[in-house]
Length: 247
Length: 247
Image 1 (cartoon, helix red, strand yellow):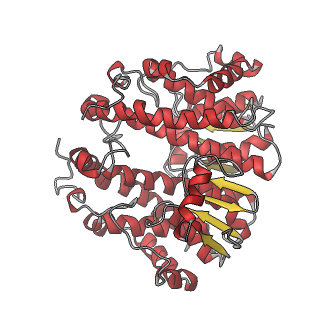
Image 2 (cartoon, helix red, strand yellow):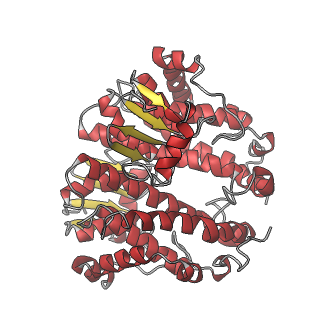
Image 3 (cartoon, helix red, strand yellow):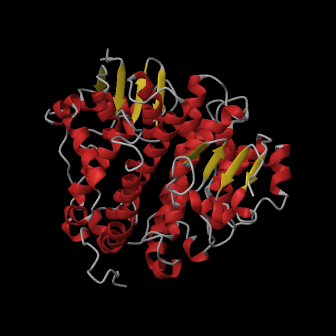
């Protein structure tokens, strides 16, 4: 059955993953959308695109978005196209560039968060690369999370209360999701990090009426250990008091 | 000394890295640009941006590009902005979206190529993560390179001879660079991969007069083992004839 919704999002059912950055934008933008792969026959429809049997540019991986005959993939690409249509970014060039830049930096940390539990291969189970994951995660929580989140904290100190200044835009939603995911996966490490402006921004996103309604709805999937952000307590080992990582 | 060039690129001197994707676009677009950090005082100028002491949006990392008072970071973001100004992408929306999508997919494989030699932490030397790098690389050359490059091969089979059809655009330049880098780092594995359309596209890029002139010039830095793509023969281990990876 062909969906009648204006926007059709294709993403793996059962996880938030990278699709969640797009979902949050669609929800905050009050968009008429269908989360195709979560509906009947949706996985088959998604696979037709990935196999190159559907019309439109073949995506390498989900998420991808269809609108009329247009099909686009890559999270940041989808969001840069979608945001002006949903009033989630100011019209001027400098704001568009800044928003896309922030989104790509957020995506970089999300990829590193994934690789913290999968440092060797996506084709292997976590249990098959657990030792390497522990080693990578020690560096991830001690070096990478603080470096990225303090960078965003410094940006929020330049104006705020949102990343682009006076009004919320789509990278705020994505940064909220990044913080949510990192808190889920690395609760002890995140509790030690002092980024008050980022915390306040996170809370402001959670309180946006449409986002709050979405988070409370069954459309918001719970975090789980098949997802981008995974809670494995053995990976959440904060830096020792000495400040030095063991060899 | 303030550069008088129209575009000012900031990137680590001494490596091609992610800056090279921007350099190739600037060269093919015949742009008036300055590769700031390679000139006198350039590293100090670059660090002022990274420390947040310069005017304009603070970048998280190089490369970034300045044009007048505008400062933008993230390779794909820079290229999406630059390309229409240098006639490196068609004007229509579908082409712009496709180009940005391709660029982001190319960037994903470039990041994986980096992590093949640095699977644990960027703060450690290769020698400190060599064992994990060998394990990751076996999967990278056997699973990831073929998956990505066969995807691009299939896109080139849909029209061609370029990614967007009849005319070269900036993701063609980036895909050329990706293939160059992978051939440098993984010569044995790349020699085994049959992607004739991609090889032809690569050769067409190398033969573009401005690109050929650039590649022959001292502006083109040689590949080296401080760079994104590194030649460590122990990481270039093709899949055994059985087709199965050792545990």
